[in-house]
Length: 431
Ligand SMILES: Nc1nc2c(ncn2[C@@H]2O[C@H](COP(=O)(O)OP(=O)(O)O)[C@@H](O)[C@H]2O)c(=O)[nH]1
Ligand SMILES: [Mg+2]
Image 1 (cartoon, rainbow, N blue to C red):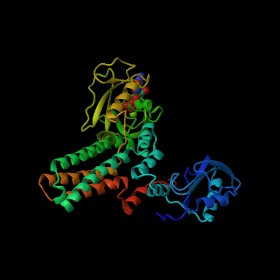
Image 2: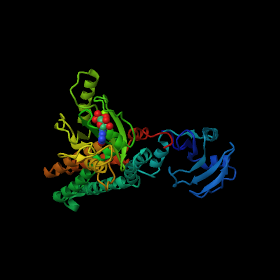
Image 3: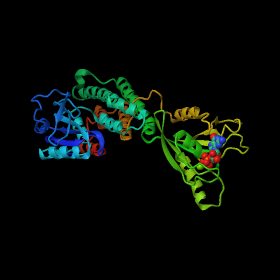
C-alpha cells in the first residue's frame, strides 16, 4: 500500500456502461480537487450532503463531500456520482490524476478506513462479503459483521484477557503487597474465554456453507430423474433430460439460491454397469463427487421394483422418491415429482435442515480466523496447565500474551504489515 499522506482516486462502481458511476477521491487534497473541478464547491462543505455539479468534461452529477472523521475512509473525501459511461468516468479520472491524485490500489479505501479506525479487520472482511453476496442469507450475515457483531465478540475476549493479564503482571511485580493469585478464580476466567472461543469456532461450519455453498449431489440409477429434478429446483433447463439411459455422462454443477441459502446442485451420471468407457468414467466421477458433497440425494423412482442404489462412502444422504405423479409412493423417502412440482417445497426444507445453517444465523468466522482461534485456545490451554502445575506467574503471563496476540490478528489490533497486505490484496479495485 502506498503512503497515507497522498490523495487517491478510483471508481467505486463496476467498470462498464451503467446509468451512474461513482468516483471517490480520498486524502488531504480531496476538497481542493473538487474545487478545481467544480468552482462553486464551498469552503467548508457539509459532510454527507449532496450538491448538483456541472463538470468541465461536459458531464453533470452529484457531489458528496466528507470531512475528516466521517465518510467511508475517515479521511477528507469526495464522491462524484456521474453518468456511467466509460468516457464520463475516464475523463473525470484523468482530470483527478492531472490534479495530483494517485490511482487507488485494490482495497486501499478500506485499508485507510481500517487505519483510521472506521472499522476493524472483521468489518473490512464483511465489506468484501457484502460486495460479493449472491443470496439474501449471505448478505444478512455479512451485514451483521459489518455492524460489528464479530468485532464486539473478539474485543470482549481480548478485554477479559487483558484484565487478567494486568492482574497477573501486577503480582509479578508486587506479589508481597497484593497477595497471591487465586488459581481457581483465574482458571475459571480462562475457561470462560475458552468456551467463548469454542462458540466462535462452532460458527465455522455455517460460514463454510455460506461461502462455498451447500454441495448437494443428485445420484441414482439412469433415468431416475436426476437431471429433471435439478432443472426443477434450479427453475431452468440446465441439464439435458431424455429417456435415453446414460444421457448425463459427466457431472454438472448449478448454483441455486434456496430461500437465501447458497446451494450447489451437482447432477451426475446414472449409476449403472456399462461397457461404454466414457460412461464408465462418468460413473466413477459420480461416486467421487457424491463422496465429496455435503449431502447426497439418492433418487429412486416411485413404483420401481429394484432397491435404491448403494453408495460407497457417502456423506449424509436423503432418499428421494421421484416421479410421484406416475405411481404412488411405495416405501420410505420423500416423494417428489419434477413434472408437477409435488414435494419440492418439502425437499427444499429438508436440504435447508441438512445444511445445519440455523434460521437465526449470527455472524460466522472467516477461514482466516480459524487457525488464530485455535492458536489462542491452545495458548490458554497452556495457561491453564501452568496454573494447575503451580508454575510461575511469568509463564502464565506469557501464555496470556500469546493468546492476546492471536486474537489481535483477527480484529487487527495486533496486525503486522504482512497480514494487512495479505488481507487487503484480496480486495478488488475501488473497495
Ligand atoms: N412423469 C414424470 N417423468 C419424469 C419425472 N422426472 C423425470 N422424468 C422422465 O424420466 C426420464 C429420465 O429423466 P432424467 O431427468 O433424464 O433422468 P436421469 O437419467 O436420472 O438424469 C425422462 O424421460 C424424464 O422426462 C417426473 O417427475 N415425472
Ligand atoms: Mg441425467
